[in-house]
Length: 228
Ligand code: ADP
Ligand code: MG
Image 1 (cartoon, protein in one colour):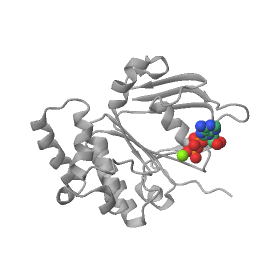
Image 2 (cartoon, rainbow, N blue to C red; image 1 turned 135 degrees about the horizontal axis):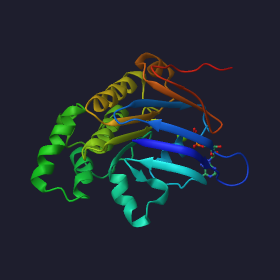
Image 3 (cartoon, rainbow, N blue to C red; image 1 turned 180 degrees about the horizontal axis):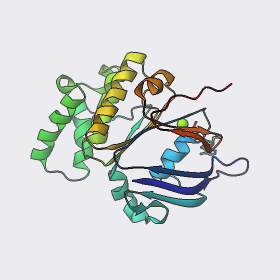
């Protein structure tokens, strides 16, 4: 589902952000990516979204050769990938319903489908009642659940989350992670960048640890690696 082969990424002079990374993520997997700030986690996510191009190496996602993807095909490619970020990225002047429906409108889903799908996905994230609220009327945890609903409404095969709980308290962090786990159980491949040591240790998923642009550990049912 996701393959990186000898991927390097340099932003300029100095140490590369990613240094010869090779990685396979199978269809249906749930994996955490952990590591110190600056270790290259977000760079990896951006390469998968083709927001960046690697300096060298190969990247395949859903059988697409991402490194050779034409500009004109990038929007369609990205629609196959759901994304969630630390800062929620909701449309501030639209309500919850509209934020989620928007993802379907841009791919021209018929109105009657949207009116069925949005309530269904809002129920899944526990926000059915808040459909009329604006983002500023919601807690951080609720805003992230809207972002999650928006990320999955088009049924992406892959969900990428870059520090989705970075702005949340422990209770809301757990709720978001449990939803990510649920989404994965429904068949979506899920990749989660996080610093949340407790959650990583409890969930016993695959844990890929990065340091200074390299993968220093990749464990099945792993935990957070302690270093001094
Ligand atoms: P992480 O997400 O693990 O904190 P990043 O992938 O954001 O790490 O960054 C990896 C390295 O690349 C860091 O040294 C960072 O300073 C550098 N970097 C990230 N983005 C840029 C950029 N746009 N221009 C130059 N250097 C960058
Ligand atoms: Mg980052």
